[in-house]
Image (cartoon, rainbow, N blue to C red):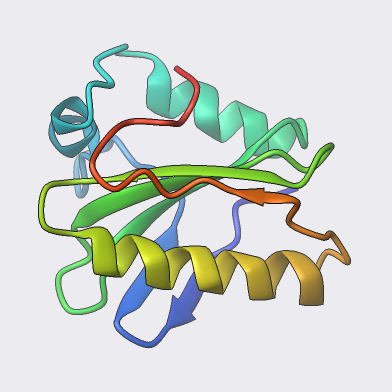
Amino acid sequence: MEPIEVNAGRVYLRSLRADDRVDDRPALAEGGITDPDYVATRIRDWAADAAYTWAVCDITTGELRAELVLDPSTGRLTGWARAGERGLLDEGIAAVHRFAEGALGLAVTDAVSPGTAPAAPR
């Protein structure tokens, strides 16, 4: 599946990026994710239907504030947020629930929202 963007109130969910226009790697590093291939891996995961990953962004700036990862084989949702961004993470979780259930017919079985602690697999 191609990455799906979701607009949901104060949050905008999009694929992770590391290109000449947007580079999420510095924000990911704040969450402890420093693998230089992480973004490319997550994009390949979408194509392989192995995991669907979203950058949870402020709707006005497009800057990554949190990250969510949905495992389509289990419905398990994991995520983490940058310091002070728990509210946006929670809004992103609600949006992914709606998307997974409405568009994919997938029940989200476990929503992990650890605040600022990374929970997404690296």
